[in-house]
Image 1 (cartoon, one colour):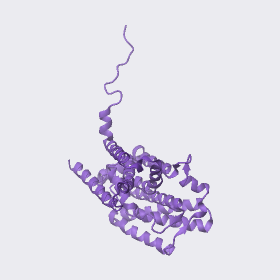
Image 2 (tube, one colour):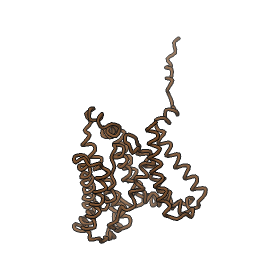
Image 3 (cartoon, helix red, strand yellow):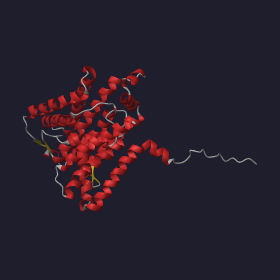
Image 4 (cartoon, helix red, strand yellow):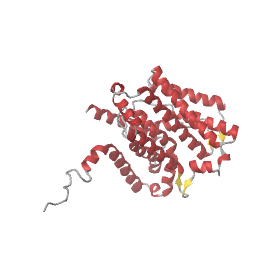
Length: 330
């Protein structure tokens, strides 16, 4: 009597080799994080206490939320060095609208729209004028930073009236009393960017543009529109990250965003995104952000000078780009 059992295909089940080939970049970055965390845990008592992890989850999202869409921009072979000034400019709008109307939700929308508009301007300058994004965004970084100083006359603005409100609790409160909402928002942004890159036509266009722009055009990809939208998305993320920062400390300082450029880029490149475009993952940047963030407290716990972290950040960027260059050549 013939058996009704269907033979299992040779490739059925979990194929570890295939998984590692397809996700080697993410596995490698995650392994580095685990390795470092084991060293931290064994060698420094500070990393055996829960408050340091709460602090990391509270502060990393300020710039990590921007690093995630910045990954998409770099995959598309572009760069945005102006996001610190977009943070400050967007929160300047929030402060102005909130003072004028007393409606923080309306001010929140105005803040995000400002980030979108400034990012859009960056994209239009790069795409339709033809200035390389590295040069264009250096210029807009100075321009918008100067505009913030002109508008505010260099003043800081307290945001104490938001304390105790549902608006503040939703943005920077603590879920279940201990889990920072900033971390929830960073995860949601990461999921959104991952969806765009891996499950949406827009992401396929980004990878195609980063791999070969001319080929993308021949395939009918709307290259100009896609590039402009990438800058606009980074602008919205910068506005949101900057607002979280200002609301958390209940104050807006005109130098908001200063110091985030280097660590944001370091997280992107450490996460495996290639500066040459076409290669990168959101998960890699997410893990890279926490590796970068852990370096400063680790350096302080070891007893080294705090400014040593800048040396390490610089080395990370150079080494990450160098490794990508070598692998690309091979």
